[in-house]
Structure formats: C-alpha cells, structure tokens
Amino acid sequence: MPVVSMKEAGIEADIVEDGTSFAENAQIKASAVFEKCHDIVLADDSGLEIDYLNKEPGIYSARYMGEDTSYHIKKLANLISRLERGWPDEKRTARLVCAIAAVLPNGEVLHSEGTIEGIIGYEEQGENGFGYDPIFYLPQYGCTTAQLEPDVKNELSHRGKALRAIKEQLRKYCEEGAYEDTDRQ
Image (cartoon, rainbow, N blue to C red; front, side):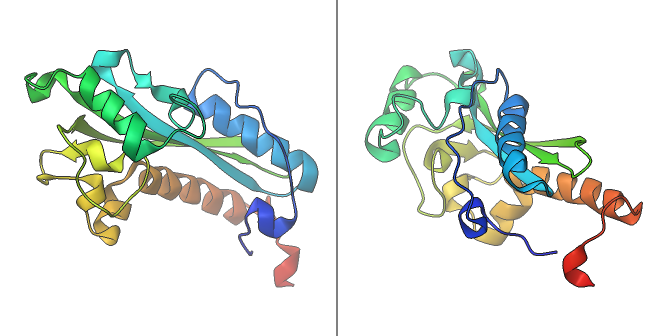
C-alpha cells in the first residue's frame, strides 16, 4: 500500500488543532483528512514539555510565541533564558512527545505515543534536526538530539518510537484481514 502525504493525495484542509493533548490533536488531524479520503490516515502531533515550565510549550510547541516565530532566534533563546543558567540539570528536565492517530476505514482509531527524556541545554548545539532539537540535551549521549547521527536519532526519537508502535498496530490490523489493499490486486 503506498504512503502519500496530504499534498501528494491532493487533499487540502485547514485543520484547527484545539485538543487538550497531543493525542487529541493527532486524532483531530487524522479524522479531518479521513473525511476527505476514507482510507487509512495517520497524523501526528508532537512537541516539547519542560517540567519546570508546567510542561510548556506542550501542545502549543509549533505555535509557541507565534506560528511564524523563528526557532533559532526567538523560541529556543526564550526557553533557555527562562531556565536560570545556574540551575542544575535535575531542574531542567524535559521530554519530546509524539502522538500518532490512525483512522481506519471502519472508523476505528488507533493511537500510539513515543517520548524521549532529556534536559534543556544551556545553549543551542547541533545541525541535525529541527525545532527544539538544538536545545534538547541527552546526558547519557553527551549531546543534543540535533547532534545525533540520523540513524541514532531515528532509533531514540519520540517520533521513531511512536511510528514503530503504530506500525505494529497496523500490521496486526491488516493481518486480521480487516483491511484489503485494492492497489495490490
């Protein structure tokens, strides 16, 4: 079964992410696209939760400080400055979260979630990544997620974990014969 993006499928949708969790927002997005194509649809919602900042930016990670606000110039610097420089690592705890929702042709919704625990670094480091990766520091690896090699990052990341989990659920769904891919016949 081919995997295509919304753009490749010719689907345009202005989706309002007004859920109260990553899982709700993922389901809102998947359901909105499902209404246009009536086939298996996967959507994710992901972001950064910083414990000291009451899990900010959380579900607002992409829209934190405004949708068009630069990560490198504004968002990352703001978060670093809000965590006092002298604070020990144990007060800088954070996680990256990814929730995936899959809406199936029968209307059933599958969910998966992946997280990676770390701390907020003291400065931006690394070029391999996007969003909050340059400040998301992994003490056990001695680097930020933006400094990890892509294959290592994919293995450890919140998105990689969530994708592997939803893939397993979809595999079971297809093995049970609930989904027949007409493109293969």
